[in-house]
Image 1: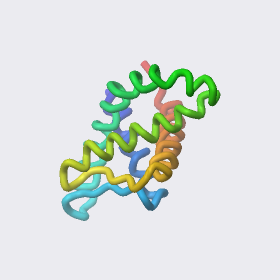
Image 2: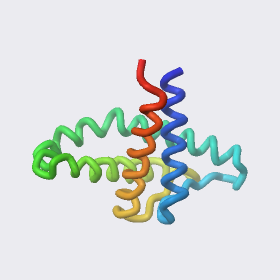
Image 3: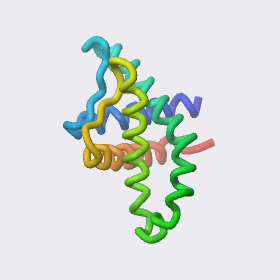
Length: 125
């Protein structure tokens, strides 16, 4: 149950980032709300997998930069994970589209804040 709730929170955070940042968009096969939700959940699942598998390796490799920048480089790492998610989902005709690094950086900041805020409400087991 906790995993499904986290997936929904991630999907909401990605939707909010796409809504607020013009250079980020969620593309679905049809312009119906049902398809948008399905695509958002699929993108959130890919984003969760990328964060679980790739992000720890990148964080360890970039540890000196994280220390020197007092943790601000983690925003760059989050932006890169968002761009990687977009690159993975661009294989299909639907998914996440991110136009540029700066859009990914702002989107990653929005996603991080939303995940943190809603994560506090949900709590952990």
